[in-house]
Image 1: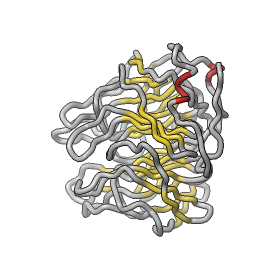
Image 2 (image 1 turned 45 degrees about the vertical axis):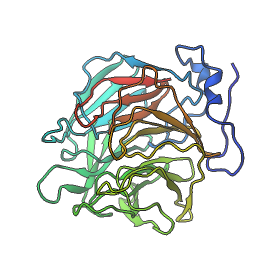
Image 3 (image 1 turned 90 degrees about the horizontal axis):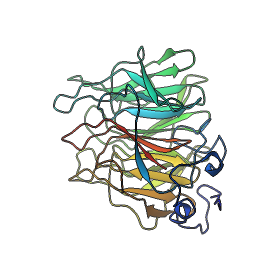
Image 4 (image 1 turned 120 degrees about the vertical axis):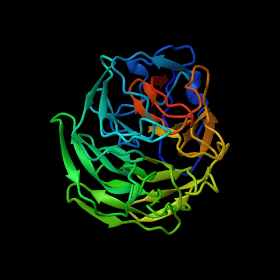
Length: 356
């Protein structure tokens, strides 16, 4: 099998379209260990530490069978933790009268069994979570209260010790529908909407070692928006998609933020997907994958891979894919990309799907 290595996230130059990444695995039904190219520190929306991630796919989907799965939900968070564990936390468990959850679920990829845990921050959805390499940081979100429903607090969960440490309400303004990434040492939070239902185009950087925040530049940042995706490339935060708070605009553009220089730079893209917000997403090495989302009218059931160095988007197969949905949870694992839950605006979904 020929292996292809994409080098230099956000580099300037020409890279092969991602459709080539499917060609040499097209006949496979499983990803074997020797197919998993890349290190355990490959970049990820969750920091990437302890997350070996395949970026040569068979371009196929399958439905996974798991035991004691979470209930149908949307707008939860999901991260790939160490020791073959996927952690899903929070979310909304109804549509007509959204009920926020404060329960977490851990999927053991060795046994494909889910277990639940509690004891964390107040119930919420539309929050973010990142993985530091040993702990999960949950921040912000929406608690469903009649007033001041948006939050600017959170918690840090240690899955080995099974303990939570609270993060007090300070730092950036309260918000939901924002984006967050882990850089390896810090968490960057950007965008979302506030308690006045206004779009936000600002952000801040949290250092858990000092329990402190610092502001980030807004010069050159994408327009203010809710529900964008954001991934960490290894040196920059890439923000893409999202929508204005009132739904008057939905985007398929973005920018990259460099925390070392506190500067933003525009993205150059080819074969850009249609506008969308609330897509599922994660990144494997230099390839960003999105699935689903919602445009100005309907839930979407397509997916794309972005070769970050070249800016080339390529569609992925939708044969066997989940039904159209948004606000699903998506996370890269050593077996491939998981898609969990979500909604189409009428139905709530459960189940776990694998793109491999």
